[in-house]
Length: 357
Image (cartoon, rainbow, N blue to C red; front, side):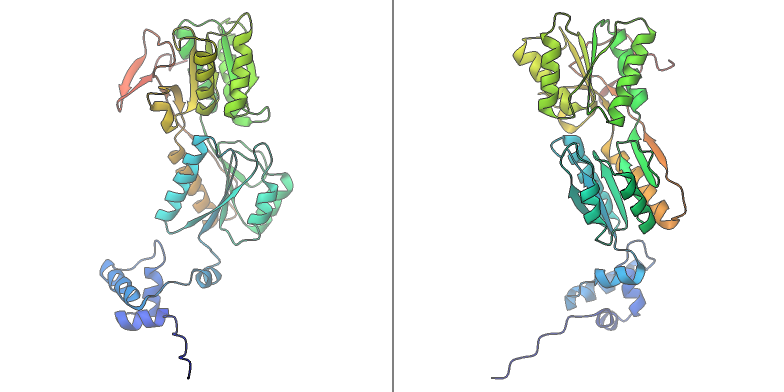
């Protein structure tokens, strides 16, 4: 019996013929942001659906030198803040017809092995968060014309742009808030010792209090992990001069601090000790934690990162850029509240005291 020839896959030309338009119009209809009348686009999409046509993204990337793929190198995915970053970046890229390629690195390690794999793909840009690259990799990406944007980390490496929250202002605002609340023994739980964001938050926090004659801040590291923060807080609360206020450099570590204070030491939060976090992940506003925290909107960080990527793709000669996203101190149930300075915005209590300082 003679075997039937395999059915040929429909092409752009087939769609153009059925829709009664030019082949270039079909190409524009499947290109995000391209100019094509809406009635024409709908006619093309109907024809494509009738024929079972799917655009050849690989061929298009070869023609345009763009793959519409952005790589994300990330670590610490157990932290809900970074899960937010993944979701926000994926949603934003999808809305503009692009895709995300995810590479993970073990906590505490640099991203070089992941980035070496990334460069074997044709990606338009690389976003990094909770991980770092070496100078050699940064130079290699720069030479290859692949822009890198670092989210929630500072970097002085050539060709790496950065988007971060207002770490120093947040540290000062949290210190002012706790100082106005009458606390006198302060502690800070940072991330890893080499974390630029953690160092900035802790230095601003301690600097504000030192300038007002407060006792030295007890500084420790929770490595941005739940267990690491629990161990650090356990050590502080076991001492003779335990703090009455703790600022944790992430909400995730603050969750651990709350658990240790309440369950292991029987402390009332905030009656005996105030605990403040940083990020405002969704869990922070729920009843289980009701965490006072400084917000760092993942969606705003991602939006700025995408803007930078688009600018660098449009003009590769641009220098690396620096962006800072504003946040605010959200007052909930884990910290003693000062007498003045609380306002209500969007159903959240926000501390506005001492803003002129």
